[in-house]
Image 1 (cartoon, rainbow, N blue to C red):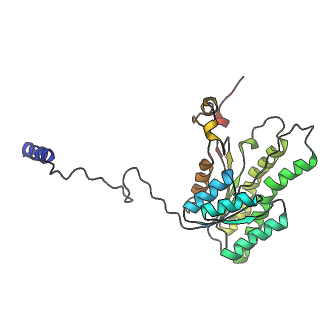
Image 2: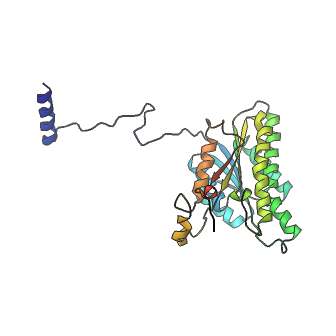
Image 3: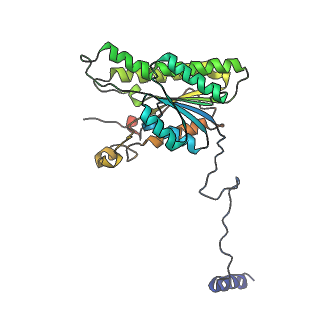
Length: 281
């Protein structure tokens, strides 16, 4: 019988009458090689979302069906990004505490809450220490560091008034320079080191409100002119390439998934392996 069965099936195949292979579904109902992720619509606020990594983060959450608002000092780029991505833009200099607080409170007032807060905004001033002024050093802290506290504090005050804790995420964008340096990077490195430390302090303070707090430390992320990079640029990375803004945006989405509330107070390095690479000259 077995031989007859196989002969019959072979004849069906040759005559084109075979029903063919039927794809087996996974227990979740997906086809092999597919992964369905449930991402409920969230209310997302991003600082510094007009360009670079921030714009990629805004796009990723918009593509996921979220309501997204972002602020930036560059009004022209901000308006263009908002129109292209379907987000809400607020022109703000984050170094202006009152303006930033007003922006966050305006978004909360309009939406009722902020589910995901991404503190992305940052500037860099790389100068020899004997040429760097105190004012320049302070400006970097006022843009890179202080807004993390200001936005988180505003959200904490709102959540406290709401009472019952519920889903929330704060994601701070730090840098691999928080643990490695070159000459003339004091202002930027200090700000990012403080962001990484502030992250685990905020984690403890935001826990009663149901909000997890994590930071992401990007390595070399090329935001413009990727095609002009050399083979040497890419090959020095164990991953074989320089990073893209989307690499950081995907981690923001991952941390925001409802089930990922056990990742808390962490700093996640995304650098293609560079900070783990032993280098001697």
